[in-house]
Image: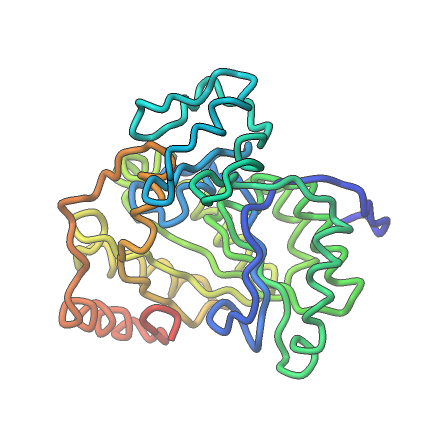
Length: 309
């Protein structure tokens, strides 16, 4: 069981707080995005979430070439001739270049905050949670990656009477999972692929822990919805979707599976981080093909929605 003593000064790194969401849990919600993830999915729409530390992002079309960033960088991590501007291995994330970049070309992905600081932000929208039956959704990255900070945030939310939802890859230890679950009201959990070898190829990790934890959550009594990010040429074949639906059907307390079609909304972030986007040749699936997968899921007696709708 979690400790009942809240450490309001516990620190962690978040990269965004998104208000007035209506797609990631019941009611009107605020989403807190925690940095760090053990998976490295090529289609990730938040690549700035993968590393646990702060990262400098360069938005080239905003740059006016003033050179102020170069003059203040103490680590020699700015190269004006480099298209991505930043030598990431030299950057110490001090943020001095961001402070002088009035054009907004340099931005820091990730900010260290205390639990108290985050809760103060969340309290600003408490009336919306109360009136709509909403609450707080923790996403990432992978919230379990910052387990201690995550636990304290959940404790703070529950002490305020807020509904809590988590969006997770399911990759954590059973011990940590059992510690966190009593603080959670709803779980959205991704299953990327049912074939272990293919799962490791597309995410960098085995799916064994993920599937085991899905079973643990299902038995805990905490409501859970399974999501499949549908990626063409990766996991969108009928056999994999049917295998996933069959597994979800075996989770007695889970009645819903959501298909989340691939999109490229985060592609420009790879440029900002100086990384290559690996799926340039992949096109989003057609509505017809997604509808066919939806029918396949429903054949297993599961409720199925597309994109969380």
